[in-house]
Length: 449
Ligand code: MV4
Image 1 (cartoon, rainbow, N blue to C red):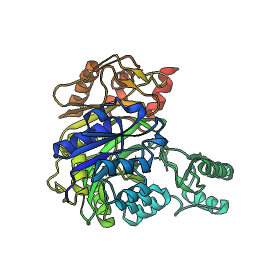
Image 2 (cartoon, rainbow, N blue to C red):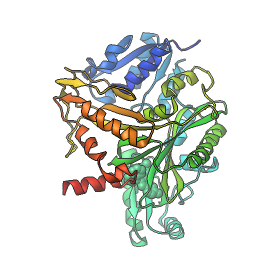
Image 3 (cartoon, rainbow, N blue to C red):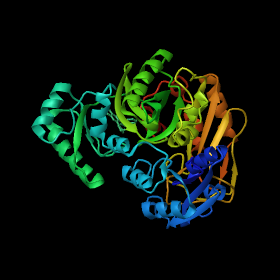
Image 4 (cartoon, rainbow, N blue to C red):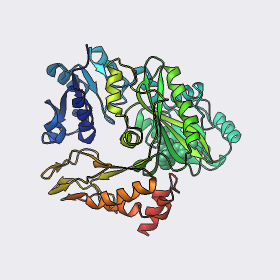
């Protein structure tokens, strides 16, 4: 039976994004929401809505039993998890499938493998992806760590196997600090993730974060949709993303994209995935894989013309990929600004009543947001309230359009990061595409000095 009603296990702009793709395919949607989100746009737009618990995400958007119950009572036949929340929870994917529902996501075994950074790296290496030099798996004793670090050379970085988002990482400059930092990394990982497993890598001093979007049909076919440059981050939160990367040539894209697609084909990967690399001195080094749709997916949509959520739904429904690698064309340039309800200088969250709202518009301007005038942004969740995505034939044209679109955006009643973006895109280094993962924090430190 074809999918006819999707339960969207998420909130905010991504819930709207999934709703829109579903409705364009003639598929009904079921929203779930906490009591704090009763007035949210994703609830208003959906065909049905089910309250799944109190404001705390643990008791609502992370409450598997409540979400499965909502799917049963609404007669949904598929679940889309969006990003965050339960999207990379292999157990949840299994439970969804065990209830006879279609999981709009990767196979649970692949979610599980990629969620364990040590297993992910091992698997990536076997699949032919280039790795950061380092330990071959987990490192348990100090003597072993010392030998590995001496071999690859200092500085090294100690990472938690269950980590992610930069948590549980320690940069170690020399051997005399290795034992202390290993113990620290292990105990921090234990308290944060309940797992003290760590591994070691060569520390790359000043790389870019470049990720490839891939799609698999679960039956041995896979394609890549090019890369995104996500180097502009603050405290492991992406601020602005672009596609293509200003530093990757068409030949490099085709070569590395093929390495990624071949790897995904070989593992029988299903659905959307992102392969994250650090890029330094012209070389790619695999660090992690994300087994979900990502916040920044619209920049890839803009340069390829492929609706990634539609593609996810089609694949979950057993249909083939809608485009072949040969048919895919990368055209133009796209930039996404994440607009958060926060102070543009201190980054302090700024939830509350939105008194007026006007989204930018015009040619090649997209705003993904559940905002409306009179909406009260709840304090319980992520502060991202909108994504502004702009397209242009060239990077320069894209930046000019972005500048214009940022001027047009109106969000009153709360503070937003719009002024931060306006300042950021005027910087020479940004205009030149000359930035790495350290650039944004260094620029902010100078700005605030
Ligand atoms: C690294 C690294 C340098 N060398 N690994 C941060 C989060 C996690 N996804 C991996 N991270 C890093 N791994 C090696 N071997 C530097 C980072 C890193 C980083 C990576 C991507 C984007 C922003 C970052 C900010 C600080 C550190």
